[in-house]
Image (cartoon, rainbow, N blue to C red; front, side):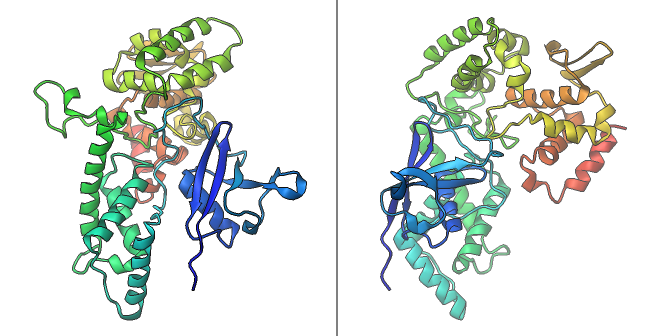
Length: 429
């Protein structure tokens, strides 16, 4: 049977943003397969449809309903569904920004053509007579490289359970790779993946990836030169934990933008300008938070625009609103939290007859809020913005907000939901 020729597509993601997609097996036979491949290669969150330039209508964009309408070097455009919140960082923004949380089901990528061919034959043999494949070094390296490249789209510091999830997904898709004598059938792959990611991070550190260089030995405290000491990494499903500066920008140039922010913040009806400047300076702000752990009072002086309800509600560490006020308030009002004013070490929600607000480190950061549930929702957003730990006494309270109300890392909670609910209510007694 003849092998299908690869097809190249130009995929328009937004204004001044496009990407090449290569369909190595030719155009898929169904729209669902085409959408899945575009989503995988472009790492797109949420749901969307595709449009193509229709030659019957002067090459205007029309909805694509059949893959047969596209051919090699065609241009298609991604149109996101209204419910999908997507921020496409443009205008010279950082190229290492991630766009998705860890997937609920890890999708094993396609490997190189020759590797896929070897695996196809090996899987056929396994189904016929149960023959396992012992991959040669080249094939194993190709598999690990492909998995590593897919993993870092979501995380640079996967957890042990993440590695196990990927290894299990690998042997599920390619059962010929299952290891004999292993309880899980993939413990060796799991170990190999850990080493591969360690080596991959070294490569990224050498090319200046900020999320990795922040943990280099030269940034460790004196006398604490162990590579494992104080590793700074996402802890709560953060995306873009420590991004690089936008292309063409430096700490000095972004500092000038920050100074401009101070003057723009004093003007009325200036929300859109502030939003653009806050987007542009996101990386600088994150570096200050992660590297320096500044006092809230000092940070408020440097970044007063962050302490607005609209800015707190939009946490740029995520590909969605981390402080989805409506979702959090609905969840809070549906539990005893609705009549509970959160008070924790270093941060609290004020609940006085004349005022509801948020206090962190003794500093009033938000006030004149409409309700306690709104204040708790915004406090949650500030915890993300300042990279704060959940207060030990109320850890499960905030985990419920994170994992149940906002579904951040919710896929790792299914077997603990009831236990967390029980602990939450015990905290509030």
